[in-house]
Image (cartoon, rainbow, N blue to C red; front, side, top):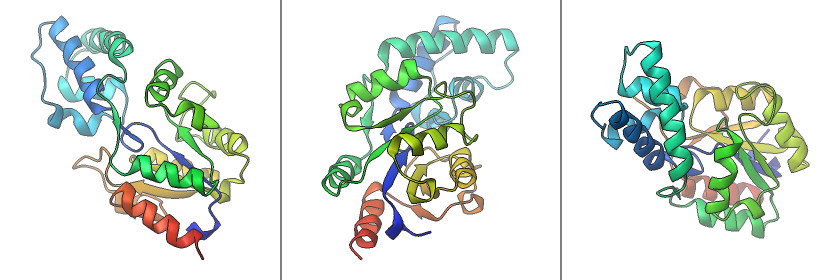
Length: 224
């Protein structure tokens, strides 16, 4: 497989397609303040933003008991429902990449573990929902990533064979899911990778430093 064979592109959402950390960390901080805990700096929490609400809670209050973890997590989700998309934006270089994919008639979409009640409103705010034939959330199939179920559903909706799809993500589970489904995996190094992450050990076809470098690599490959 190579980029020259790509006929569809799928993205993880948080930390790959869009910079959602400002909203997620604001929701976290509101929930912490609700229970009398000081807010945390965005920079300190950013690397946890790809890994779900409990990961954010654990990064903010490591060692908290289950009752407090659950209380803060539930408040986080409630606050996030209200502010979802308020401060989120596409990563620099994503918008021109999507425009180019449309121009080349290469369909694209999202496969995320974020629940649909957050995914769809966010993509609507970003004015992307009408442009995507694929918007698969963590509860769209019985099992989320790294299971193959959402990946294979995405391929079906994109009307491409899995081996014709490039899947971009910024977490190991994204690349494991892509590999298991037979897709070409690409690591979004511009995303929310933390100090403990080891992307060189993840099963990926390539690593991309920025959306612009991904755009360049795709345009060169598809022009051949």
